[in-house]
Image (tube, rainbow over all chains, first blue to last red):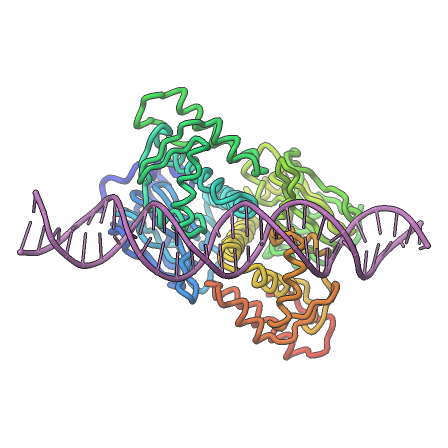
Length: 258
Length: 258
DNA sequence: CGTCATCTTGAGGAGTGTCAATAACTGTGG
DNA sequence: CCACAGTTATTGACACTCCTCAAGATGACG
């Protein structure tokens, strides 16, 4: 039996408000499994027996159509949960493929367990509701972005969120995964992404190879927010500005996203 | 006080599994409000005090960006719920505008009430979870469609779902709302939709004015499902086929969608 | 019979996808 | 340390889809 658990489990929104006892009881029902880069976690249509908490690395969620085209719906990072939407709605099988996009560690928990707990512990059910509600909101924002923004604006917006989510230094950071994966995530072709990265230099984003540097947050802001109707979305800009002002030279800020 | 309630309230998934007593207690806390075609229900950013159940008519949910561009995220019909995602996550305000797209009747209920009930009645919380989970799944399908299907395929797919959801006769029905609204819903321009409707005649869909007739479900199926990776999605085809086989001349089938 | 909203049709252009060739990077084994 | 193969990324030329702007057609309604 494991003696130490990843720190992400302590700040997990899913377990927020639960007592230390309940939390550890839940966690004891699962085990941590390592996955090599590129290793599949499960496939589309597989039976749904477990859900996962990403502890380390990154996980690609994707589907592929008959003609072999691959469509990435999300890339998860530590703290994210896989399959929590399938706790109640018993589908025929997994609605997407999941593959490790880096060497990763996932905590695997039986889904039946979570289902029972949600039935009895209203706190957990409400946490789930909050997570799903947030997910729906983000999906709606992304749909709007795809419909109203150019490829350049989508890429700029993506790089901002990437920087905030991973707590990178806005003045310079390395892309955490391949451009192929990023392009797929954004629903565009690799060639389009490659060309786009050269065009957004005019808007304060300097990309060379895997290195990204934000050189003018003001230029970025006016560029990205123009065609976006969601004022919430501009929170990323605020967070970036705060970061740059507060810690102009720190490479590993200590706080997590709010 | 009202003496009769719309029939949609009896089959509402949100209230599934609740006793008749609990259900009527919930419903007594709200009132039915009529809205004229085009009348706003609430605006983006408004404080969130109520949620709504669509009883009659249709409701357009949309946002508009600074440049005046309007983006419809959904069109709701009787049985759908507005604002159930905001029960827990207390946002600054409404995440979209809501406007009656026809003369409509909505049941208005205080959101605090639902919040309290969800805390105490785990059945209601689980129903909410199921609804949100379903919504997330649909959002993911639509995102994929926007990314991988041509305008023609999206229109064909939309018309199918329209027919199934509204329980229309596949062999001939009238569009329930304007083409302008449909185009906005599909994230395309009215001109593109207009042109597209003439092109999909080759694929078994005959549209003239507001009249739609499905003339070859097989042609439609091979056309729509080609670039779609979600096998669930083809359930619409199955339902259409059943409908045509079982009730070749019925105009008002008696059963609802599963 | 006008007036207004809705829809259709046309021509031109911006933005992406597609195909193909080249370049840069990564790891392996001699 | 270098040569090699395999993956990943860049760049160019071209086609196609969809958006934009503009003009006309259709339909609803007083």
